[in-house]
Structure formats: structure tokens, C-alpha cells
Length: 389
Image (cartoon, rainbow, N blue to C red; front, side, top):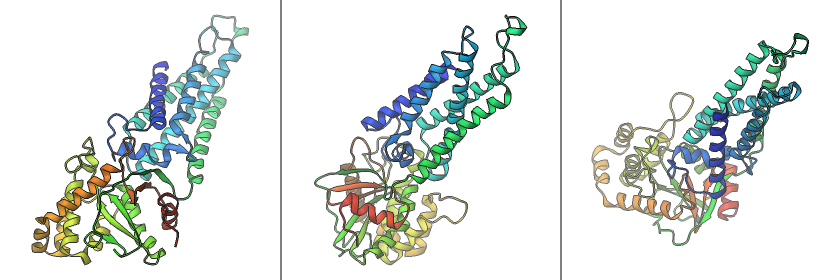
């Protein structure tokens, strides 16, 4: 039990240090699922307190309580120590289940550091509860006379303590859900000398002549990009033609993006998908919107899954024709535009954070984590200084 406590405590300290100092965790390259989780709003409470810091306090409290569970401890102190451990074990188990659900069904990505901490916490909680059950079935101080013997606690009070901890985890989850500030952004930064883009030749949502044009860095295999995609047209309409988004694929794969240090399975096909999308734009601009919507639409199931290159290529040929697609595929513009997008991605990396989606306007950039078009419009105003319509 002590070993599990120490492992969980060390993991919490490492993730808290990462939150305070920035940079990438070991094994978590720019835009990796790990980075998506650690940089999401679900890694903090009310946008202020890191969850890893709270976990550190919980595991430290369990460690201290465990020091008072020895054979020489007085029965009232022993009861109090185990009561604290049971309550906190319920909190740990409930929180681990909640954040696993968040990673699976909300963020759509898993952080190995987080999951290791969650699994360790679940094992620790199970061990504490199992040991407490054993102590409810056997009296303590067996070496003493029967009249002096006492029970740690009965089964029902023990269960109540665990459920109290689970309830506390539920309060934490509810706080995260209801305290989400409007127009959340994971991070805001600025950078001079962003590479120039000719909007007249680039894929744009809205008019290339709009006074405000935001560069949208994205990846066809990014779940948050999928959510943002369907807000873009609505936001453009809110601005009544004064706003546009230039779409710049920034694949999170070192195959074509040197600023991504590690290859991860989730983005293994990103480079090819980006090129297919640009080929569709080059071959037939009118068909590009249909291709984009198809790429980010899911046809079955309860969550979106990225398209594979074979299906994407077949859809592209269906929309623009085989000869037109092949001609666009060999055009040098496509490779140059992709390199420009990647350079923008590289120049907007700060403290090792190079995730997407990322919106760039002038010398400022932001990671959007908005949940509706109104949030996104407000984010553009607050973070990128674009006036509201």
C-alpha cells in the first residue's frame, strides 16, 4: 500500500511541476494525445487549480494517515486513520473513473501519465477497501482480554465512508462541468514574423477580402479540430463578411512536420490526409467544402473517427475527378503551402507546447477550446483582439 501511495504521489508531483513550468512531458510530443489531455480545460478546476496538485494533496493525506495504522496505535486513532483513508480512497476511485470517461468520450485522447496515475489510484483504493473489509470481520487487539477487544468499524459505516469519498469526486466533476468559463483557451501567445500567406490562393472559409482573416492550423485526425470545424461558417456569418478563416493543415507527424518530435499512431496518416485535402482545393475549389465536411462528419456510432487515407483519396477522386486530382497531386504549390503551414506551426510553439487546433491573427495565437460559435466569437475578441460584430 505504501508503495502505491508513493508512486501515485510522485506522478502527481511530476504533473504538477509540468503545469507550473510548462514544456512537454517525457514521451508527449507536440500535439500528441498526452499533450491534448494535459493542456485541456479538464486538467484544471475553474481554470485555476491543477488537478494534479489536488491529487498530490490527497495522496499526501493518505500517506500520513497510513502512518497511524500500525499495531501499536490506539483504537480511536486507528479508527480515525482508516476513516480518512476510506473516504479518500472513494474520492480517488471516483475521480479516476471520471477522468477516464473524460479522456475517452470528451477529449477523445488518452494521456499515459494520467492513466498510470488513475490505475495506480484505483489499485490503491481497492487495496485500502479490501484491507478495511478484513478489519471489519476481525476484532483488533486480539491479544487482549475479550472485554478489551474492539472492532475497527462495522461494514455499513465503512461503506458510508467510501461513498462519501465518491460523492466528493462527484462534486469535483460537477464543478468542472458548471464552472467552465466562456470562450476557453488553453494558452495564448505571440510571435513576430509569422510567414506570409496569399489569401487569394489559399483555402478560405469566408471571403479572402475580409478585413479580419484568422489562420486556422488543424489536422484531419484531431478531434478538437473536428468540433471547431463546424463552428467556422456560423462565426463567419455572425461577422457579416468581415471575418474569414484561412485553413492551414499542420500535420502532427514528423513525416512532414519537423517540429513534432515523436510519431504517434493517432497522427500517423496526417501528412497524407493534409495533402489529399490540398489537392482537392487545387483541383476544384467548389468541391473543397464538401470534402472538408465529409472528412469531419461521422456517419455512425457515438463519436467521430478520422478518415483513413484510402477512403479520403476515393472521396477526393469522386468529387473532382481522377485526372484533375492527379494533376493537383503533382503540383508544387501543394508542397509549398504545406511547408508554410508547418512553419507557422513551428513559430507559434511556446514552452514546448505546439498543439492544435491553433488560431493565429497577426502576431497573436491561441488554442481554442470553445463549445459553440458564440464562445468562439468571444474568444476571438478576448484573445486575438478581433472586435465583435
